[in-house]
Each structure stands twice: as structure tokens, then as C-alpha cells.
Amino acid sequence: MPTPAFPLERSETTFRFLAEPTSVNFGGKVHGGALMKWIDETAYACAAVWSGRYCVTVSVGNIRFRRPILVGNMVELHARVVATGRTSMHIHVTVHAGDPKSGQLRLTTDCLVVFVAVDENGNPIPVPPFVPQTDEQHRLAKYAMDVKEALDAIVELKPEEVVKGAV
Image 1 (cartoon, rainbow, N blue to C red):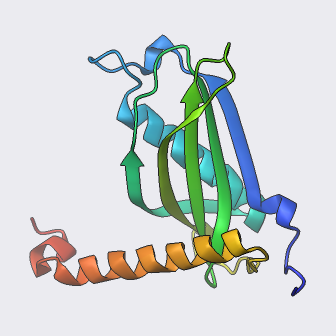
Image 2 (image 1 turned 90 degrees about the vertical axis):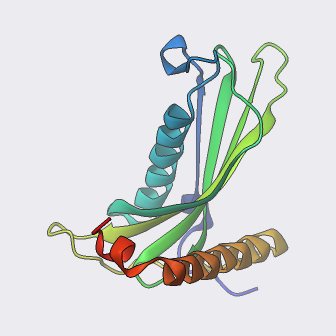
């Protein structure tokens, strides 16, 4: 196996907490916007640890809400670097939730978040390359690149006024 360019233990971050009543929507479940905020925060922590730099979110893709999160559920977000570009990091985030008394957490959401490391002036700067080591890491790296290609293709479909922000 090739030697990783950076310690792999720096490529993963996990956040755990209880879903609070302040995160509930009108339907009594955790609000999708609150969940997206948690995903962004967890992915940011992962990207910042990997790069050792301040990072900015470039895109969130392929997010899928599979089941609701209830108030009082234990929520676990797991973020990991799955691919890098010169200045970008593709972070796969999974969200599991469930009753903390049973200890059984089920997958509720997953997505890919892309961050770019920036310098003090906000200019993109290089990040350490992520070198997949396991079959799962190789599959996730391919998945990230497939999603990137699909998103790039979608951008090509946008009307010119939308791309320019005129609509």
C-alpha cells in the first residue's frame, strides 16, 4: 500500500449530541435547516483539521434525508475526507440518530460537502492530498468524483441568466 501523504487519523471527525427542542420544525421533527447546519459544522471541522487552515464551503451535494430525527435523539455526525483536489476537500458526512437509552442509531442522512482551504486574504491554497488506502476509501473517492462530474454537468445545463445571477 502507498504511504498516505498525511496521517489518516486526521481525515475523520465525529460530533455527538442530543437533539434539542430548539431544533424542531412545525411537524415536531428536527428542522432540515438545523441538520444542514450541523452537517456543515462537522464537515468544516474535518476539513480544517485535514488542511490545518480556515476553509470555506463550496458545495453541498447529493444530500438525502432518509428518516426524521426526533427531539431527544442522540445524533452522531461522522465526516471524513474522501478525496482532495489541489485546494479542495470532498467530505462525506453521515448522520445517525436514535434513542440514547437503546444505543441503536440508524442512518438518517448522508451527503458530500466540498470545502476549499483559504489563506488570510481568502485566496485558495493547496491542501495535503488524501490517498485512499482501503477498498471503502477507494469507493468513496470514486463516488465523490462521480458526484462532482454530475454537478459540473448540471451547471452546464443552467440558463445563462441563472449562471450570471440575473434571475
